[in-house]
Image 1 (cartoon, rainbow, N blue to C red):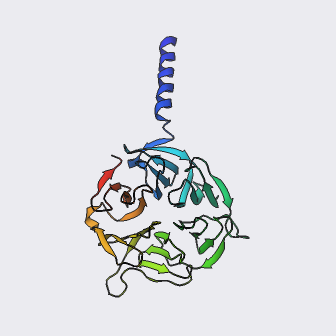
Image 2 (spheres, one colour; image 1 turned 180 degrees about the horizontal axis):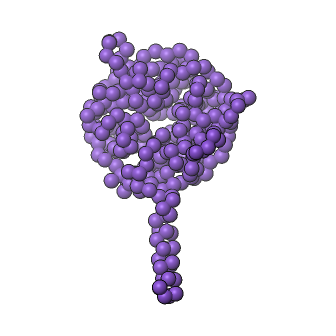
Image 3 (tube, rainbow, N blue to C red; image 1 turned 45 degrees about the vertical axis):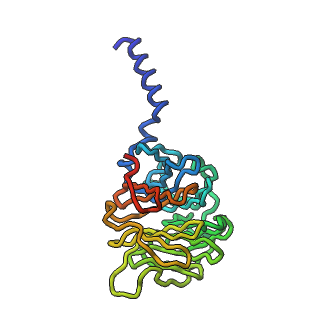
Length: 292
């Protein structure tokens, strides 16, 4: 290879990397295997943020995910303040025993800082498997690791509530002063009106049929979304009754994450158990694949 041709190849490679990002910080949606959290980009609502097993990504409609920050860290807990650029996260460092405590970003995930280790006197910083922030009070958060914890000052200090229901697949706080807490579990959708001390069925619970809830999401306008296995995506307004938005067969497997566009309440995104993303612009009546 001539020196001139080698110089040309290096220049071409540099231009390509500048335009598309390095192989280390971009990947196709189809190569992301664990999406622990989902949020709509408030600056461009056709883009999504993904809290994943290998960092925090911004996903474009063409299915290309770009690493924004905290690469090499598994963000098992994630919560976005409704209509805001403030995010909370927790988790651990990949292939290490180091846990992250509670992280906060005020710029939509571009940078993060640790705001707390969790409980005072704990043997290690917290690594929450689930995080939930109130849609109407961003100072109120719940975190779940081996036990349920609560923070009333925006994640700075935490106190232990006690044991939570087993195998929590999703957790969300309802809007309003009541601060009703919901969890999706293999034993159904449960709710607590006393800050997680006691629980009662929030969907069904009177018949013999086994109810499996795989996600729960709440919105500032009082809506509660839940996916019930073999029944579909359900929704109810505060004080109303549950109604089916779409049958379970409409998706590829069970739904595990849901996010609502803060600028358009009828604009929804969901993630299936196989990491496929679907989008609806009519409040959940019809859906199309996203990121192809």
